[in-house]
Image (spheres, helix red, strand yellow):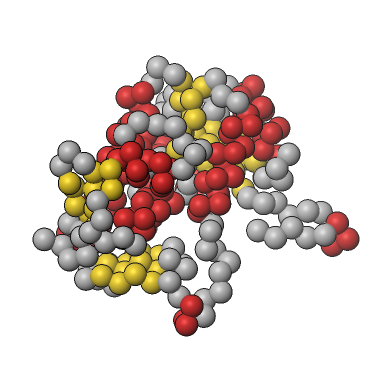
Length: 248
């Protein structure tokens, strides 16, 4: 987003973030560091409040604690994904590895382990926002459009728009990035290690199951519209995944 000059009045905000944690000190710490980056911060102290705000208002990104009173972060993310593709970074404690995998399964884009460095949070937020809005302000001259067209699947990279059989598929930033990465190299096999390195980049440190859970969610979303499109993401047993230009 653009920032107006001080002569034009107050600075416009770079992005609108929802910070969800039941500990006030953590919300206050995150708010302090993120507001320094000119982000507008809205807070929620539990799952019910988080879900109500996330569904009724528009946010550019949500920082979501996994362990919340009442509705936990897993359920919040799951219900959010039924309606919206807002980028989500999950905040988790060290011993909650299984829960982190569950977080990816319900649509979280990244996670940060507590105790965390506020600087790391800022870097992760910036990275995810950058991925989510890479093409938001690109020119849409049809002569310059970057479109991948396959049977049953079209990816308009300039618009970050995926359609299958004329129906748009609502993907999270990470799901879209994974699909586009595979589709731009049809029939090339990528190991899980390669995908984790190239799609999640340096700012993410996770295990190989992260790739599997995202592929699973991607296939599920494609299957709802076109089972043929879902089959284009093929598993190469013992190696990883590839995108088959013609599904089998």
